[in-house]
Image 1 (cartoon, one colour):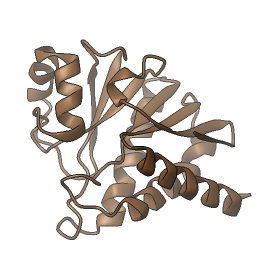
Image 2 (cartoon, helix red, strand yellow; image 1 turned 90 degrees about the horizontal axis):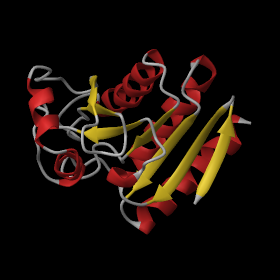
Image 3 (cartoon, helix red, strand yellow; image 1 turned 90 degrees about the vertical axis):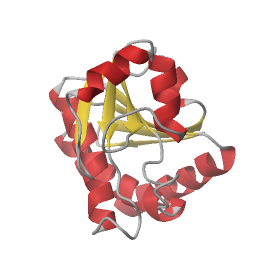
Image 4 (tube, one colour; image 1 turned 120 degrees about the vertical axis):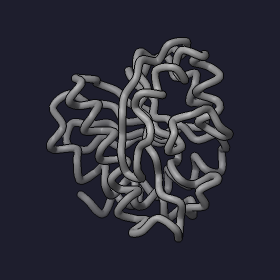
Amino acid sequence: MFELNHQGVTLRCVQGDITRQSDLDAVVNAANAELRPGGGVAGAIHRAAGPELDAACRSLAPIRPGEAVITAGYGLPNPWVIHCLGPVYGVDRPSDGLLADCYRNAVELADREQLQSIGFPALSTGAFGYPMEAAAEVAFRTLLGLCASLGHVRHIRFVLFSEADAELHARVLRRLGEESD
């Protein structure tokens, strides 16, 4: 839908199913603190990956808002899943700082693991109540600021469930990309 190349890294926004991104090294799970199956993105990822993912997550939990941990992808088409706990908007403070930490920690973890591509959902925007446009601003500002420091990650994709959410993310990325030029 929209793609921006920034300091050797391609950022892309698409509408689709995050569990069917077979060309990515890792997808990001919008996890809960206990890393258990749930609703939304976490439920979809756990269902697609199978029960081995739940078993692998147990020794890594609990995690705090802003943290990221990695497991194998099991039944997913991706070798890896990076689990992030986003902030509950208006409860976990500072929400913008904790959300930025999610994106930063996930991408830096992928880079340390020498992964080249990673796919994100819109973290914290579902049940955690973060307004979509504000969350997209935090995400893209954080990621654009990291691009120059990445040694391995070359592709960052936002996979949004609805076309409207994908269009909103594309608008925000386009605007921030123009500002960063």
